[in-house]
Length: 377
Ligand code: NAI
Image (cartoon, rainbow, N blue to C red):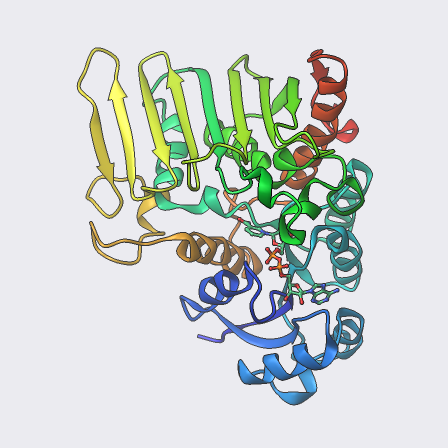
């Protein structure tokens, strides 16, 4: 099997998300790391890329050099991952899509709704994939939940309740630490702090499992640590297009919660529950029946879950393997097999719209507002 060629921008040594991409992309032997501009310091990036096995002429100092170097090569990369800080995603993704590359962009895809809509249009026009790394949606048991909802196993969905709440920024004495402070500084983070950082994973997950879109929302934002300009806690109520009621809580001051990402989906004939800290289990309760634990790797799962399970039942698979599943879907899509489970630019712009309109709603005391980007109204 010929391996797809993969290039990476950002995700340099010591970065948070870079290792998960490398473990994920290389896990199944479908991609090889062929090019990279890995660091904001050109020499550091070049040196690290070569240490990872990238040829010297494809270990670039910055993304513009990489675009120049790759665009006319016969063996140009099939996919470019953008794992840089948020404010750079749009410019880099746009340039590579327009030059005919497939892109996997980290979340949040853009900073504004307009930029997000532009990436949707460019992806449609060029026919190139613009995927977004909503990697939690790629855990096998999240795929199982989605398939169960699609197959009517819990009946019509009434209610979805989700939280992505941790306590890692809950120490007021640490609020001025530069690694923490920028996340709540509008000049660095944009219009939203915690909701744009973690809440959008939960909102995307609600849409993903229910296979439905958020239409309206009402938000309450709070800065529990008063020196913060942006919210460190948010409660967002929403409604989906088929009437499903949604509740979302996201927080970074919930001391004692570690990762704290969970979702419950309640239908007319049953309920489902998944928690990111126990990702191999999906809890299912049929109406009037006993609660069951459905395990990754067991018999009788839907294909969508089975095809993404690498090791046998009860052996743990974690976060990098969820990222690996995004790369599996990408490899299939690049090789011509459509994968509607792959989060794409339309999902990215829906998140950006939800962030911006939540800010508007919160400023209006929680007024209900249209949550959809203008292009999808
Ligand atoms: P980080 O600050 O730990 O690392 C950023 C890396 O990008 C560094 O290696 C830096 O040198 C490099 N870099 C910065 N500007 C660059 C440029 N112009 N060209 C090339 N390299 C550049 O950041 P982290 O936490 O890894 O986040 C990166 C992105 O990944 C963010 O957008 C973040 O929201 C997202 N992320 C997504 C997660 C997920 O669950 N999908 C989890 C963590 C982060």
